[in-house]
Image (cartoon, rainbow, N blue to C red; front, side, top):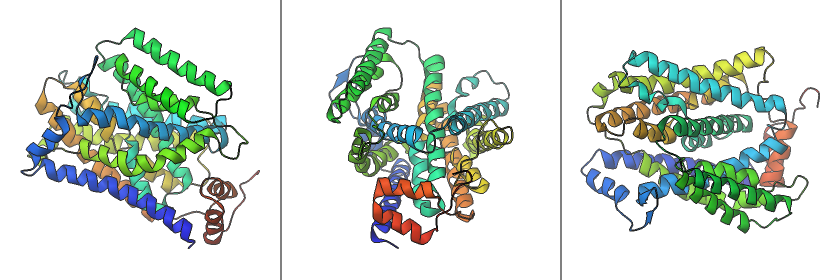
Length: 417
């Protein structure tokens, strides 16, 4: 195996392991005598206050601040694929949208069915609707070559769409008030960044500054601040035909910081759930509804949408991925930490016991989805790289990566290419 290829694969696995270790450390800390110290570290006041937000804590800084940078990175990757890669046709774009919509609707319906119409619990219907991109990608990174580029892109695209959907749900169902003025400021900032793009600004620093301003405006508007990362990514120049565009340059700049610092920090501050009485609590309607919504609802909704859409000619199955691999990715969509925890906190703010039940359901559903998805993808038969896969590897990782891919997987030509 080529040394550069091996090093890249090792870095991806190391990033995934770093996230899992940090999440495991949070679980240990929150279920041992270290729990008071753990919660104090998350909630200690930093002495900085923001209007409409209050005094900042490490938990707020990571979840509402640093994770916006993660969404910026993911947004840039999807934009690149949207214009130059696997999402460059209308047929390919329709797939993640259809899958994400079904992957939100079915978990919500399962949740409502399990709680049996209890009006006190119905407000949490949106808890199992979103996919956690960070943890899902960590599982794919550990899988290495058993998770082909098509699967990673499909999972990211679905997660981006349903996370944006979750933000819309938060705005409509869980936001008491929106600051229209700050929404206007956010829109104006985005327009200014898009104007820089049209005027030919190609340095990446002005776009980072614009991203910071956009993040602040979105945060103050009452919406979840991480959406600013996706919005900012839309405005960054891709420059088709350029040797290395502004978007690709910025993507490479922030990638190691995101994967080896921001994502593990997020895992540590988000995964601390008390498991006291967890087995019994898991059988209660609220926890059970969340768990089944994530584990069953997500895989059924996503996979059925792709299967039916492909059969009906609405969308096409991703080339470079087999049906078993697509099913494995559908199961991984049930990993729901980030937005699920956030929505759960909004839905049951006044009832701490229900928030704990939601967390237990999220933990169980996400863990089941991670194990089952990993297992399916691990045993699914790998299929060869296509010419497009190898060309993309050459552009992103260099000539040696291409030579390694050629040596391990003789190139195939897609029908009609």
